[in-house]
Length: 233
Image (cartoon, rainbow, N blue to C red; front, side, top):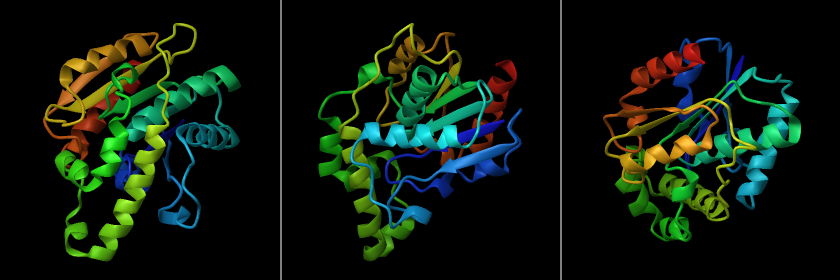
């Protein structure tokens, strides 16, 4: 079974390479999805909007030859919305249902506030610093910082076009899990319960100690949680 991973705004797929090294139940291949404009896709234009992003992701997943209920989706922050909306579109347009969907470090769609990501773009550096997502190398090298911030702003621009998927009993993933840091500046723990309306089976909600980028210190804890959920599914 394949697991497709989607990263945060401004992120590189390689940030999640620890998942490729992990022993995950039933998963024999982890695909790190790289958004355009960075990494191996640095020469490609960024997505024009969120819908184009999801459409591209769906096409690539379908082209990979996955079968119904034989793949897993994981997304963190911006990637959580990508993973969720991808699951819904794969179901409605292709008849492909994921085995499990993991959403990490993200509020439920109903909690998205119009204009929020526009403000984040305008104050991108302060926004990332608040979340704990500014790597040390960026603080030391202006050229790297400029490149990184440009990618981040473009991703936040994509998020501005996100029209949240309504929680509908007619099109929602069957099984999923939610994980978030208890000190996440973007997501209040009490908001997480609203994710329950977005899955057919009530998802487990797991709160770890850490900020928005809890993954930096809690990789093993995340992997244990994922294995528990995959085995249960």
